[in-house]
Amino acid sequence: MGSPATPADTFREQHIPALDGIRGIAILAVILHHCRFLLNAAYPFQRIVVKLFELGWSGVVLFFVLSGFLITGILLDSRTSPNYFSTFYARRFLRIFPLYYGYLALTFVGVRIFHGVAGGINPLAHVNPWWYLSYMQNFRPNTVIMDPFLGHLWSLAVEEQFYLLWPLLILLVRPGALSWICAALVPLSLGIRLHYAGHTPGLDAFVNTFTPASLDSLACGALVALAVRSTVWRRRAAPFVRPFLLACVVWFCILGWRAGGLFEYLPLIQTWGITALTLLFATLTFIAATSSRGVSLAFFELRALRFTGKISYGLYVLHPMVMALLLPVFAAYPTNAVVDLALNTEKICLVLLTSMALAAGSWFYFEKPILGLKKRFPYERSRALARRATIGGPQQSSESSAESFAPRRSLPR
Image 1 (spheres, helix red, strand yellow):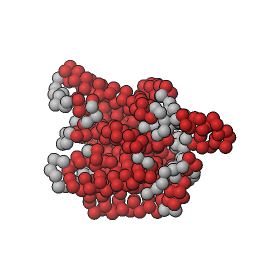
Image 2 (tube, rainbow, N blue to C red):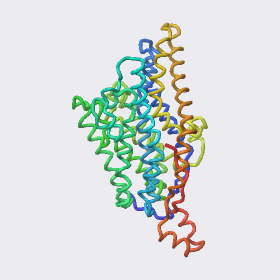
Image 3 (cartoon, rainbow, N blue to C red):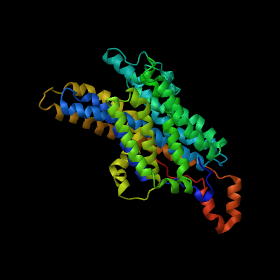
C-alpha cells in the first residue's frame, strides 16, 4: 500500500485554509438537517427542500474524515517524540473536554431547574448522565439519538474512543503497514453496516452510531494523512483524484435514486451510501491538502466559510440547545399558506444566526483562552533528532525541520 515516508517525503502539516471551509460546510449541513423539521412538507417546494436537507447527516461523515486526517497527521509527525502520549492527550483534553462537559452541566442541571420551576416533565429524567460523562453514549441503542439536547453527541463519543486506541497503533505500526490496516477497516465497517442495516430490529437504524461501524470514515481520513506524506503517492494519485471524485458523486446519486431518497436510515444509503460519501470526502480532503491555491479551492477558502469552520465545534455542540430555546418562539408564529415559506425561512435563519453568535462567543471568550494553554504542552524532539540537528549543520537543516515537533498551526476542530 505504501512505504514509510522518508524525511524528504514528510508532509509538513501547516494550516490549510480550504479545510476550514470544508469543515464549515459540514457543520452547516448538520444544522440544516436538524432544521428540516421547521419546514412544512405539505407544500411542494418545501418538500423538495426537506429532501435536500435530509442529506445534511453526511456532515458527520465529513467530520470523521477530517478528524482522521488531522489526528493521524499530528501523531505521525510526533511519533518519535518522548512525550508523545502525554502531550497528545493533554492537547486533546484542552480542545474537547471544557466545552463538552460544560454543555453537559448546562443541560442536565439547567433543564432540571427549568422544569422544576416552570413545572412539567423533565425530558432528561430517564437519562443516566454517566453514559455521557464516560463518552459511552453511542452504545445505547434505540435511545442515544432520541435524547433531547444530547442525541447529537454520539459522534463525539466515536471520536474519543478512536483517540484512545489510534495513538498506540500509530506508535507500534510502521506507516506502510498502517496504510493496509486503514484500507482493511473500510470493508470491515461496511460489512458491519450490511449485517445490521434493515435486518436487525432495534439496531438497524442506529448501527452507524457504534464505533466499529464508523471506523471507515476515520480510517480513510488517516489514509489521506499517510498518502500526502509520500511524494510517490502524491505523484501517482494526482491524475486520478478528480475523476475519482466525480465517480463517487455519480455513484452516490445512483444509490440515492435506487434507495428512493437520501435519508440516512434507508438501508442502501446507510450501507453503500456512507461508503461512497466516505471515499468522496477523503478524495476532497486529499485535493485540498495537496493542491495549490486556485479556482478549484476558492469557494472553500471564503472567509465566512473558514470562520464557520473555526467555530464548528461550538456550533455542533450548542445548536440543539438553541433550537430548543427557540421552539416556543416559533410556536407563536402564525400559520398561513401564503407566507408559510417566508416564515419558515425566517425560522431557519434565526436558528443559524443565534447558533453562530453563541458559538462565536464560546470561541472567543471560552475555547480560545483555554487553547492558549496548549503552548505549555509542546511536542519535544527525540534526543537522536536533536543531536543530529546539532551535529549535521546546514546540510541536515531541511531534514531536521521536516521532523521538528515545534507546535504547528493545526486545523481547528
